[in-house]
Amino acid sequence: MSNRLPLENMDLFYNRRKNIAQKNYGSAIIVASQPEPGFYGSHSTFRQNSNLYYLTGFEEPESILVFRPGMTPETVLFTRKKDKEKETWDGFRFGPEGVETHYKIDKAYTIDEFEKQTVQLLKGVDKLYYRMFKNSMADKRVQTVLEDLRLSQGRTGYGLLPIYDADEFLGEFRLFKSDEELEIMRSACRISAEAHVEAMKNTRPDMNEKEIFNLITYEMFKRGATREGYNSIIAGGNNATTLHYVFNDCKLKSGELLLIDAGAEYRYYTGDITRTFPINGKFTDEQAIVYEGVLKIQKTIINYLKPGLPFKELHEMATSLLTDLMLELGLLSGRKADIISALEHKKYYPHGVGHWLGLDVHDAGLYYIKDQPRTIQPNMCFTIEPGLYIPEDDHMAPAKYRGIGIRIEDNIRLTTTGAEVMTTMAPKEIADLEKIIGSK
Image (cartoon, rainbow, N blue to C red; front, side, top):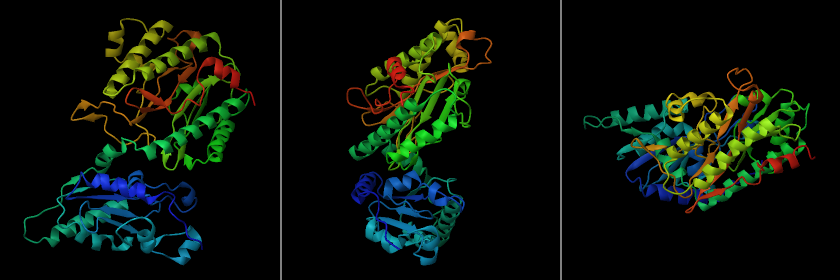
């Protein structure tokens, strides 16, 4: 059976750990792999825990990293042992020797040695970073280690190590993207955008949503995607007013809009694009009014971006501008300040304007620091995605706007002066959309 080499240059992960180590001497970080799915289809659905991949590049299940900055050994990875019979059924395993050879890890053991070795590894450590409740088997192992460590210290008076959230700690590093990460993210955005374009070209009335779902998924994989970044939303007509519509199985009707929220994952980083356009290639006057209103708001927010802005301010800006649009369309009435204070705007705009983007589609990183809104800084990546959703059974809304759901979402890297929009390849201007829809 042939060997499989790591997908990435291990210097990337080594340098990443070195940077983290400089801010964490005396502590230990334990990160466990994602729980493995059921047997059938496991290899097509398993995805490594984002933090474990971020630190090691290692993609096998049943693995746990113990990272001890400034100590020897500094990195210890526990993984599955080599087993030719199981590899015949389930695929190649690196085993401890392969890990030490290929992954720039100081020491590797089999996973069944975790409790015994980690008790020794945690002696002398002053605090532990670990995220509970993500992997029940790993939780049991870590709890056993902590109790054994406490008992091993006898009557010294030392109790359990203080435990801090590893996801919160590592999220502060993941929030700022390196040049290497940005190049991967641009590729994920390009693949996502090109797949959206192909979906636009092939959309026509009387198709089924699932046809578009299959097409856009195929186009992403064709261009090198590792997997979908998340469950795609293919929502025709009134289905687009359901934010997390998942059925993707209805007929596309002429005269209605199609909302596609889909993104490709490439080398663990994901794109996240939403586009909304007419199924028959021509916006009605009412659709165009609502669409242009949302698009204008999105472009206004993107043009406003600069370092130092509180992310919360972007949410407030979207709420204010979209409430103005609701008043213009006759969806709401009254004083804007009163509407927002009473949260009446959430009837038509129930979500936020964006989220961090990276290894996860809703990526790690705090939005508030010590109860204060976080400011955006260069090389943070996030989405900007205002929307307006008017259900067809909303008898309080003007009849001409009912059943219209619109969201427009782009992926942003903040620069020192403004925004790099990484998803411009997916058109969103009305003239460009009408030209491309159904053209293939």
